Amino acid sequence: LRRLEAGELPEETRALARALLGRYVIRQIGSEIVAGRIVETEAYLLGDPACHGFIGPTPRTATLFGPPHHAYVYQIYGTSFCFNVSGEAEGDGAGVLVRALEPVIGDDVMLQLRPGSSRADLCRGPGRLCAAMAIDRSLDGVDLLTDSGLWLSAGRPLRPSRVRVGPRIGITRAASRPLRYYEAGNPHVSGPRKSIRP
DNA sequence: AGGATGATCGTCT
DNA sequence: GACGATCATCCTC
Image 1 (cartoon, protein in one colour):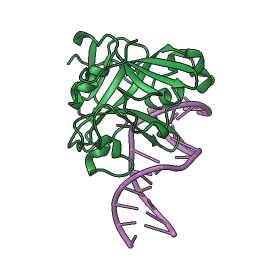
Image 2 (cartoon, rainbow, N blue to C red):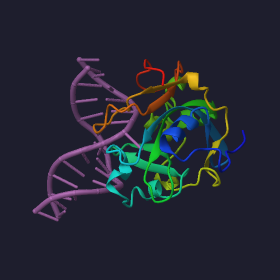
Image 3 (cartoon, chains in turn purple, blue, yellow):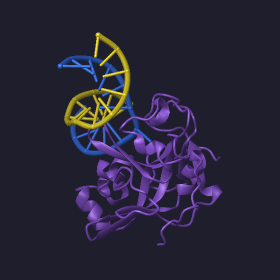
Image 4 (cartoon, chains in turn yellow, cyan, red):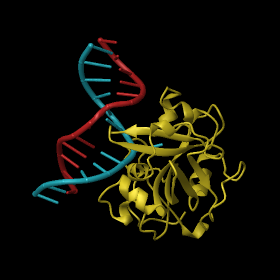
């Protein structure tokens, strides 16, 4: 699986959310490699009240305001981590939340990190995929195109006809905007899977 | 220094 | 479907 190169991903946040579908998230944990195919994302835009960057840069969201295609990782509810890919040019705070992966490599390692989980639930949900791939705040700021430990690999981008769009999950502000993207019919997608074509 | 909030998850009914 | 865990973060005093 070839690593994604500079220029292969868009910077604009909505385009990035779509372009990430079908790509692979690869993680090296010690000598072990785990990987998953992205099947669900959500875009958090500039000027979007639901985006962490809306209020301007803070220590927590610094990487969101850095260059695009870096890992923005934060902890939520004291219990889970969420993995995002920063978007837009340096100085602008926007990004894409990766909500679900289809496990591809290292299912056994992921199962050890999430004991008792079924394979279907291993990476179904933003907190679950972080647990399964040992992604935490120590990986915040990693350049996903050039750094080691956590990176993105090329995979076949999704055909437009296989992309579905719907409202984002779990937010209170700007809750009705259709900025959640997922692969039609994929059982690893979290949340509602009955929605409309773009 | 203290309080409210949250891009979730697992468990229970 | 509903609820509690659990704590980093941010805002207000």
